[in-house]
Image 1 (tube, rainbow, N blue to C red):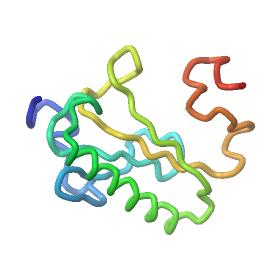
Image 2 (tube, one colour):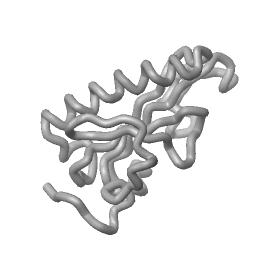
Image 3 (cartoon, rainbow, N blue to C red):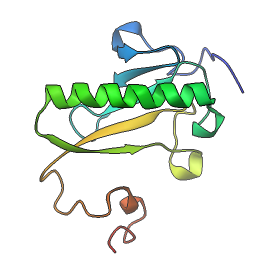
Length: 128
């Protein structure tokens, strides 16, 4: 497993972008949000993807997801659901090779038919 990498966007994030943190990870708003308040949970240690995280890092990410979820709901009571996801590997769409978890708030009516959620990654496969 690798550590801090100077050229990595998430290893060298500006402090003012960090909204909350704990021992092993931090949270910030996504620079290219798909919905308002779309957030990222990011391990502090440079790990390429989810599969490189230690159990301590996984638990810390989970705790921060829970904490940030509460903040989002407090900031926007219209949020009624969330998509939580991550990409692991270029073939899955990963473009920044430092693990990060998307916490995407969802509001009623933000898409015509939300059924299938993340299953829509591959067109035509989300409806069942």
